[in-house]
Image 1 (cartoon, one colour):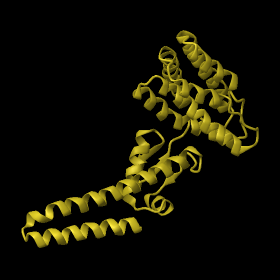
Image 2: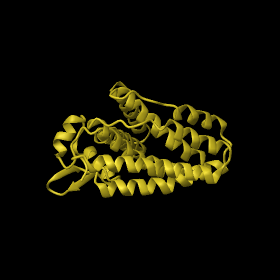
Image 3: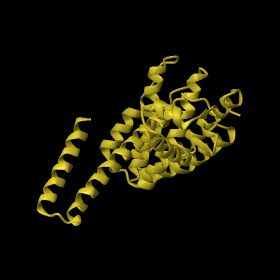
Length: 259
C-alpha cells in the first residue's frame, strides 16, 4: 500500500511540474499515460494473484468437481473484484481446469477416464521425446545433478506433508528433463500438463492412495540421459509413464471421483 501511495505521489508531482511548464493539454499526455499504466499494472498483478490462488485450490481439490462457483463468492475469497476473477476463469478454462457456463457460473472440470487417457497419451509422446533429445544434448552437468537428487525423493505413506513434497519434486524432475532439451516449447508443454498430473496425485491422497515412489525408474532415466543413450532414455521415459497410467486407471476405475 505504501509503495502505491509513493508511486501515485511521484505521478502527481510530475503532473504539477508539467502544468507549471506549459498550460497546453499536450503536457498532460505523459502523466495520463503513466497513470493509466500504473492502474493497468495493478489490475494485472491482482488478476495474476487470483489466477494462481484459484488454480492452486483447484489442483489441490479444494473445490469438488462440477460444483458451481460464483464470481461474487470467489472475489470475496480471493480478496479482489469480479473483473480479475473473470480474467482468471478464462485462463483456467483454456487450461481445461474450469468450465464457464453463461448465466450459471464456473464449474471445476471433472477428471474422467477419457481425460486421464488423453493426459497419459500426451505425456508418453512428449516426455519420451524430451528424454531422447536431452540425451542427445547432455551437456548440462549441473541440471543433471539436480535431477539426480530429485529422482531420489521419497515419501512416507499416510504422511500427507511428505507426499506433497514428493509431488513438488516429481514436477520439478519432469520439467527438468524438458529443460535439458533447451527447447522452450517442450518446457511449456510439460509444465502445462503437470498441473493436471498434480491434480490427479492430490485426488489420490484424498482416497488414501500413495503408491510407490518411482526412485529407480527416475534414476534409470537420468543415467541414460547422462550416458547419451537417446533410444534407451526415450524407452525408459515412455515405459515409466505407461506403467503409471496403468496404476492410475486401475485406481480410477474403482473410485467414485472419476467416471
